[in-house]
Image 1 (cartoon, rainbow, N blue to C red):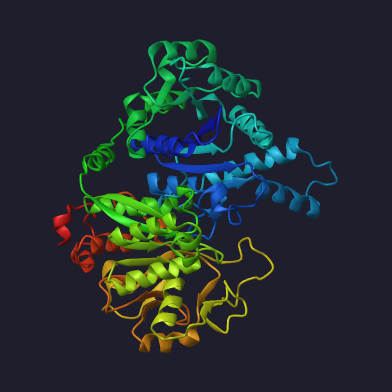
Image 2 (cartoon, rainbow, N blue to C red; image 1 turned 90 degrees about the vertical axis):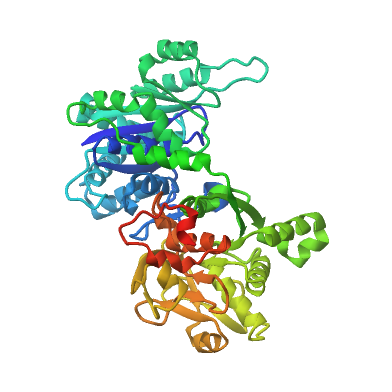
Length: 571
């Protein structure tokens, strides 16, 4: 197994995840099979209980793993299906070591960070690296490892030591280190400063790891004298100093790496030049150029709880992007904090309230994504009501589906006290209830998680046609509340149809309003399986409906055809 390690220095948030994903894309384009591992040094066992405001979205895998959003980048860029074990955390490592200690596996020895924690890290990496993630048999050729955080962080020290040992044990021809750093420009001087990167590399070398390539983030292209200075003080050849400057969209990053012969430097370090082909990034280039040349856009109202940090809905954003490009459009997302739509906001911040409603009314479609807790719920209900009453295309995901049920029960059925037990545990009229198998005492990994099957109850519905008239669909879930099955009959008599259910027939998965052009609620999260060139069917349907086209046209496309078509193909 060959390993490519991506570390970061100077500051966090430089784009190590995109860099690692792009390295994987380029190596895959050279004909190599690639897998990925993300190391997060925090003590949490996984990302499941972390606030979206602090850490961005929680990405959900097929096996139910709640992981860092960078694994979503890996899956989208590399078109692979990862497992929860591809995300290593300090919590997982310490938990596994302590379990061994309690079993007596260490035979009375003093359990220490070195060698027991570092050995556990190495064993985890080597065992996960050989698991195929691309649907083929046998291990991949290269494993790209991203070390989260910044070099010098206390919590990452055991991982750096373990990776130092790993590089020594596998040999120089099997290990390549890429260090991502920042080249700032001070406004007063206007000069590209290399000193922060010099210090970062010095820190890394002091810990026993020497970078083979530098990936330098900057707003503008690096100057030649900047590269020469970096080479001199960081002991990296000028040809191995890569410039990842700001680009119009992240699909350009693999092209930047290719254009700077990053693949050649990596393949040379890994002794793979003789088996790798020149990188074929024709499709990737076409995709980036299509996006850059798009002129028309569609306005999408995103009514959510965590709009203050766009990474909270990263996969939703990417799914909208994939769908819009398939329709030759650019997504123009209007972020609306759900609480700004509420009557209370009109009293406290009237200008903000008016602006939120103006955005909602000017949007071509409305999307209410997932979330937890009761903040902003009344605003989401108002958004769902507006979309339903004004025939505006609506897509409710997870919480967004439950919101549409509550709104329908209140407005159409006249059940004014209809509510979810999530917002009121003693709700007198619970239309959304706590799932029986859920835990009320533990939060982590206690939801209904991962890929689950949804069976279509009829082929005469929008959703079934969007999924090409399939009898079922497998999508990823993350929820602990569900539509009250005892009220399904009453809701359907009033016109709200549940066209998708789980295999037991008791759990509602998809709802539609037949009298509406596009009013869909889904309990699952289709955004997690959307890919560039293969957009999620439901996001594609939403964009088509928003542009006045018939979403069911998707079912008439051949199954093996690309979904990247001109908008006229959907009319």
